[in-house]
Image (cartoon, rainbow, N blue to C red; front, side):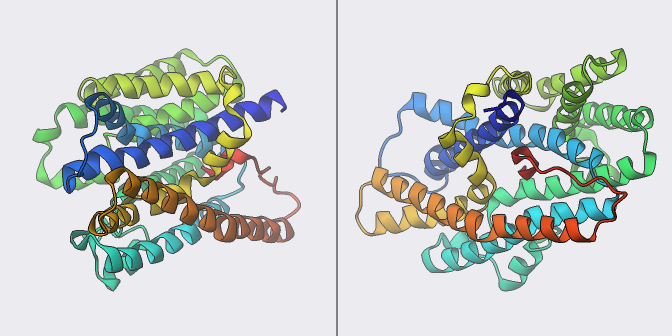
Length: 355
């Protein structure tokens, strides 16, 4: 494989590993905490899988890298919004339908939502409207879409890296202040700081953007290097030990992949796992909980129930990826190539642009 493609492929592989880590965290220690397994999970395995919940943080770093790359190759905010919508929404709608039906048939009853709530989830604005998630994992998608919106506004209005960097400096400094004085944030500012500016997570995206700048343009300026350092070190304040160190490790592994040191990850099984990562994330949690609970009610061994849940998640995510995600993206790119003006540089599609 071409070294450049292998480098981007290794990022896809990391995304797949992060998704798998989230799945195993939800199915083993987190299911045990919520509902109780019939078998004892070895403590070492539990301690290890607890880090799986922070696979989402690697997603956020990757999103910063990918979205800045996409912004630089996209003519205007309208095309950017359309591309992100086609990337996220068709698979999301399929995931919502499958999860809604599964939870109402298999449970857990505590996670069932109304049809109105499910429809609000389809907009990814549901959290701002006070609605529950169809699946608990959707919390991160709300943050992703909010990040896309901010970046489209900033990038296409400022149109200059030096001005954009000032805005990112302000965001990172606000993020430090937000997590340090988390409990003292005034009620009037709480929604802005905690939700719209998502100060616990924003430096992860910004760090990914700065790593892309290094990947694309080489040695960073002093200002960029300092800002990247602040973005990376933010995790020491935002998360408790040892998870803060794990988040730092996510930045380290991601940087190694971007530098081409993890190209060996770009093999066929890992690239396949990476290609399924989004759809796997969408359908694994509540559907998996229903499958595990059903298996217990049927008298099956606990480990077999977990295995069924993993298998179900992969089957459903494969169906969504090959029958919905890929055709939707292929159709959009074909339509875009026919309608975009000859003066606008078309965004060359690479595997990593599916993040």
